[in-house]
Every structure is written in structure tokens, then in C-alpha cells.
Length: 367
Image (tube, rainbow, N blue to C red; front, side, top):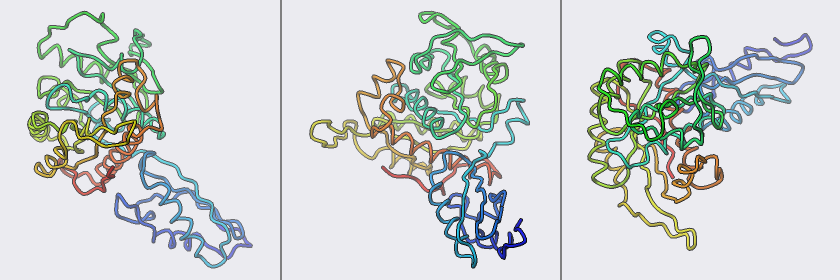
């Protein structure tokens, strides 16, 4: 509220900020209830802009446009903007499972060998580095690689009947790899897999998470079905390489999620190209543009490309993911941009959710 000396009113501030658009939600900040704590003292105006995700790719733009809008009010000499975030939540999750997780995101592939787990790990790290609370659930029961990729092989404890997730790089983890010996094979049928998936969701003390990323096994089998039955999935991300054989299998994965009424957030093309460290020349080792063409053909968003770099493989083998190992690398920057795009899509989906489907109208960052 203004003090007695101030001639500027809160109504003037809100009127000015109603001209500032949220680029993803395509509405103004006031209509979206994103303006909080307006304070006016003499010629200084303070207020908070509450974003729908900490990984918003337009934070700087929104902050600057908000400041400029308020500075246009006659009598205002200083506008102090505080940027905060409250991640938009998929409200169906708490309705079906009593866990404080705002969003569940499945990362899938039509076939093995496309780097799906590598993408999942680095996306999780990118989201965490951007300020989100992130969990990572390894649902690849037969081939749990997340412990090795995250550099931990601890045994989880149970406290008050809840399994305590393992922590690495600020991310909460759960994997069958923490519970069995590395060389122990699991020969399980569907019902046993379903039980493990439900236990990982309900019996693990995930705490308050903005995003729970779920690394799925390749293909369209029992785990995918069990997961979709166990928890409302906010959305699914498909990972492929430019090779035709990989792209052909993505179509099956997309079709499976559509039948399960899980929104497709988009397609990521991994190992997209190679940049020579000596001459800087770009080489498309596994063909070129296949992922983008496939996304257009199947009418799903193309999220972006991840370059091929031996450091990405090395990071997975040594438990030092590229986003943590070399945060200034081209690959790490690509993961950060992808994380922002995905977070933006989830925010829009949660704010406008009506019926399950494919999200196709969100701006895509291009590399």
C-alpha cells in the first residue's frame, strides 16, 4: 500500500503490469496472478513476480519488461523487482498418490542405445542447477544404470516405514541398482515389476519435489504400462538418434503413450552431430535432421539436439555427468536449454490442462 506521501497507487502499478505478457502462457502477469507483495514508498515501487517454474527461459525478459512498465508511471523513480517461482503442479498426482511431487516426467525411447539414461541424468542436473527440487527414479529394473551414472552405489535406509532416497548432486535417487548386487540378474514377470514401480512411487520419501524424472527401459513393455497405471504422468519425453532404425521405433513409443493418454512433451535427438575439437568442423555421423523430420511427421514438438562428444560418455562411465563435469561445454548448455523448454511446456500444460494430448504450441529453443 502507498504511504501518505506517495502519489503512486497500487492500482496504477497493477494497471502498468497488466501490459506485460507471460510469453509461454500468453496472458498478462496480473491476469495470471503472478504479481505479489506490491509495496510503495515515496517514489520507489517494490513487487514480486511469481513465475510458474524456476527454469523459466524468459526470466530476464519478464523482469526487465516489468521494471520498464512500472517506471513509466508518473512519479516513479525506482522499480525494484523480485523474481520468485512456485512450480505449477499437476494436481492429479496428489489426488491419486499421496506424495508431495508436483510433476512426473517419463523419459523413454523406442530402442536401447540412444543415450536415454544419459539424457535423463543431465536433464535432472540442469533442472536442479536452475533451482528446482528434482528426483530421479530409475524404472529400468532389468538394467539400472542411474547409480553408476550419478556416481553412487549406497544402500538406502528405511526411516519410519519410508525408504530414504540416495542423494547425488543435490538430486534424490531411487533405483533397483541400490538394492541388488551389480551382477545379479532379475528374471521377473509383469506383476513383480508393477509392485516395484508402485513401491518406488509410494514408499520412497521423495519429499517436496518440483519434478520427478522417471528413466524408463527401452521399448513399450510392462514397466511403461505399470507406470501409467500407478501415477498420472504429467508428460513423456522421447529420446532418439538421427538413425532411421531408431526413429522407426520412436513411432511405437509415441503411439503407446497416446493410447495410455500421456501427453507427449516432445522429441530429443541425441548424438545429433559431432564438432571436431581441433578444427571446429561439424559432422553428422548418424545422418542429419531425422529427429526434426520425424517430429514434424508425427506432429509432436521437436525439443532440440544434443551433440555427440566423448566427454558425455566419459561422464556417464565415471559418475560425473557432463552438466556437472563441464558446465560451460556446448553439451551442458544444450541440456540447460532443453531443461528450460521442458519446464516451460509443463507449466503451460498444468495451467491449461483440459484433455490429454500433444503439446505443440510452445516456443522451441533451437541450437
